Amino acid sequence: MSKNIKKIGVLTSGGDSPGMNAAIRSVVRTCAYHEIECIGIYRGFEGLIEGDFKPLSARSVNHIINKGGTMLKSARSKEFRTDAGQQKAHDNLVNAGIDALVIIGGDGSFTGGLVFNKAFNFPIIGIPGTIDNDIFGTNFTLGFDTALNTVVEVIDKIRDTASSHKRLFFVEVMGRDVGHIALNAGVGAGAEEILIPEEDLGLDRLLESLRRSKKSGKSSSIVVVAEGDKIGKNVFELKDYVEENMEEYEVRVSVLGHMQRGGSPSCFDRVLASRMGVKAVETLLEGKTNFMVGILDNKITLTPLEKAVKGKTEINKELLRVSDIMTT
Image (cartoon, rainbow, N blue to C red):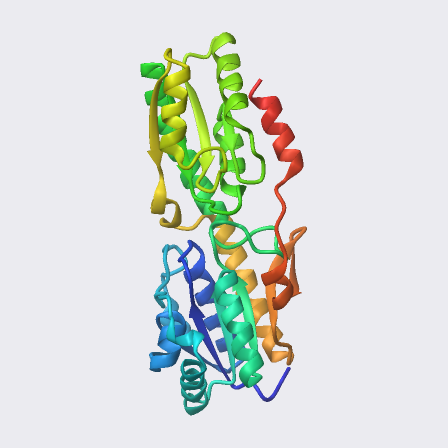
């Protein structure tokens, strides 16, 4: 173990996700286990610049493993993108005696960490926290599993209404650039069609699929749409197009929005966060920097932070095929 690391800072940045509190708890308690100090940095990089620091003990993180959001708060910081802002942040860390940082967030947060490390050679380890599951180097990001369970639960409720009124529902879920939530939740909820950015279904094929469902005896349908789907400008345009071409359907739209990012984390996310937090601290204590902690084939792994930022996740082709079969 490195004797140079005596105090570790932890911050959360970017969009919040269920499991962030569990990760904070794990980082703090792993520091306590190894008898080093842990400092909570509030409001992400903004708090880094303003010196919004607070020592955290093992007891400071009691009863947060089950809470959504992040106790350390999160904020966007334009100032951190400037040399002057980064210099302020570095000065604050040095003055507080902090030797290394654990950053919990997504690719934007990791990019900020890389830039900071390059400027000051300051040790950084990342933990992937985002419901989109769009970070290269890990099968799962913190919050993804919880978001899926939230979406499936809501779709189950919507289906009750859709069946009662013989309606077609477009359910928009988060996923601006990737369709992991839409695909997994769509299969899990038994959606009749799933629209994702990676696969351009096309308006004509969508109509064909809906007509096929109608002919097979389905009186209602659920279509899960990732917000970044390329078929229409937005989900409301899709609704208008279907209503114009399929008068037999009464169409409704439900945009799930930020409810997907909230709520108590699932057991999977709590356990994953606990494992990642331990690995993050112990990696720093081993003298390593600029890595992201991930999980691949149920093993906790390290991926170079730069690779995690630049790499692209791929949609699960097998699950796409399963989806096609299930919508028969």
